Image (tube, one colour):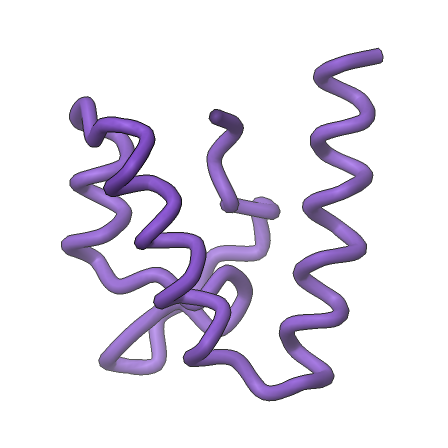
Length: 70
């Protein structure tokens, strides 16, 4: 599963405003989370973003996935 990072990282003190993941979720993803955990991270992180942020993230993520699957 491709990381939800869209290379516009930041931290508002709670989560990344670009992908919505917390530092713990980023760590879990990078360090071997299973597919079920990754799906949960995607769901949780998306719920932290505003609708506009989520739509932007989704567009950028789809571009990233398309390039990787190219």
